[in-house]
Length: 68
Image (cartoon, rainbow, N blue to C red):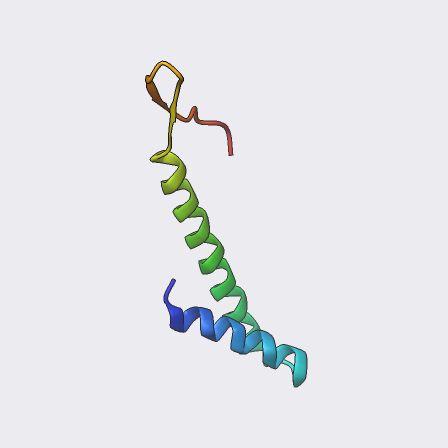
């Protein structure tokens, strides 16, 4: 997700509150929001995949995977 896309999401949100959105703009807003959420989830998953637990004895192991 680029900064321009985030700015466009915010721009559409402000416009929706003031004058409303056209059907095309509403579709664009939904698409951009979905891309943002998917990007956020992917980033969080990558961070968790690289997280390890360090036990008091110094041993390290990855976080166990859980269901979606």
